[in-house]
Every structure is written in structure tokens, then in C-alpha cells.
Length: 340
Ligand code: SF4
Image (cartoon, rainbow, N blue to C red; front, side, top):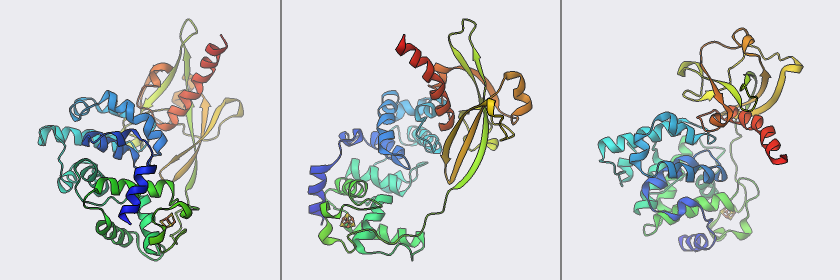
């Protein structure tokens, strides 16, 4: 099974930027970015992040705000904060060299079993198995495990033990990546492509397996203020952004649009409606055009506010929602430029 899987991976693996390096730091950054984020989104951000922070030392020496700005658009900003903190710990405790060993790696902030196993196996050839959601699905199907009857923790233990026995001791990094690649490209959650699967002969299920139903997302309505200002010459537009204290927001450290107290928005003041999902909540966000003089009356109190030119805003550590709004405001200007 290992032989077939590795041969398939060799011939079919996607050419992704982090697969062209064995630098443990670059692999670490890619693995943290890839958690909960689509590959296409990571490809874009990964290269920019590594050009700005090519080494652990450069990352450790930067400010958290700058790290968050480079992370913007990837979501789950806690990952970026932990990565930054861990880089500082590597400088202070390990002389600037990321530890090689799985057990030692796990002691760093933000590096759990999955990331430690990925770095140790891919960069250093340590035979430890990586189990992410894709690998768990592949192994459940290969072994015919009924994921609907097991508690999540017990299923995870069973799958990890199975992965540990399967990992190829000679090529653990390739084996782990091959399992993840199989889950990402053939053994898909719906309609797996079993006819093309290199390990179909070893598979008990050859198709979808039983899983527990996911918790449905909660729907919520929210409103925020779009407060704009034109420069005296009428050319550049500024936007009023707000950064809220940790106890007032689920996105501390990031700039966002001022939140409004009320979700009743008069039709002629509705600038746009956006959908935005954060963790288990599907937000419908009403973006209301608000004049600066009305903001104190309408907005929730508490954030530090700042006028920012739109071009600068696009480079700041924004929430995903604020990023969408800023991008949509810039659009007419770009159109103007094009038609001019
Ligand atoms: S045969 Fe199908 S279900 Fe089994 S591992 Fe391959 S793609 Fe997945």
C-alpha cells in the first residue's frame, strides 16, 4: 500500500510552493497557514509572508501588527499571533534554530501534534504520522471505521494509532504528504474518485463512510458603519476604522468598521449587505453609510478610531469583513482609472 501510494504521489502531486523546500521554518509557516484555510488562499499569502519574513529571526523581530497585516485575509488570526510568539521563543530558547524533534517542537506555542509531526517528518525525516481531517477521512474509509458511533476523541486516538503503524519509516515526509494529497484530491468528502485511487485494493469502503452530522451554523444579523471622507482635492477617499480592546471583540488587534448598536438600517443609508462566516456563525452584515457627526449616537462605544487613506487601509491588519468593504469601495476608482 505504501509503495502504491508513494508512486501515485510522485506522479500526481500538485506543485505547491512549500513543496519546493525542506527549510523547516518555511514548512512550519505553510502548515500553520493551511490549517482551516483553502490551498489557493494560502498560495497567495505564503510567498508574500516569506519574502517579508524569510527567517525565524526576521519574524521574531517584527511587530505583531505587521505580522497580522501580512496574515490579513487568511482568518483565524490567533494562528499568526502564536506563530510570532513561537518565533520569539525559538530566538530566546533555541538560539534561533527551530528544534528538529517532534516532542520538542510540540512545546512551542501554536504547534500541536499535527504541525510538529508535519515539520519533523517533512524537514527531518522523523517517522511520525500526520493526521489532519483529510487523513482521518482516508483512514476511516480504508479501515471501514464507522465515524458516526465513536466519540471524536476516541476516533482520533484510533486513527492516530493506525496512521502511526502505516507511516513509511524510510520516507515519512512523502508518505504523510501523499496521504493528505489523496484526501484533498481523490478521497473527497462527497463522491470520492475511487476508480482512480491508488490504494482502492486495500480499501474496505470504496466510497463515502458514515459520519456524525455537523452542527448547523447559527445565523446572526449585525450592522456596521461606513464613514468616508474625501480629501480637499476630492481625489483620495479616507475611511474611519476602529480597533477594539480584547474584551470587546473576537478579533483583537485588527482594524474593523465601527459596530452599530442597531440593525435597523434605513433603506437609503444601506451601502451594502455582506455575508461573512466566523467560526460557527453565519453573519449577514448590513453596512450603513453614516455621517461622522452621527457616529457617536449610532455606534457601540469603546474602540480607538483612526482615519485611514484607502490605499493604506488595504495594507493594514483588517478583519476579513473590513477587507471586503475596503475592496468594494476601491472598485469604482479602479474602474475610473481603466476607462480613463
Ligand atoms: S478507494 Fe475510494 S474511499 Fe477508499 S481510499 Fe480510495 S478514494 Fe478513498
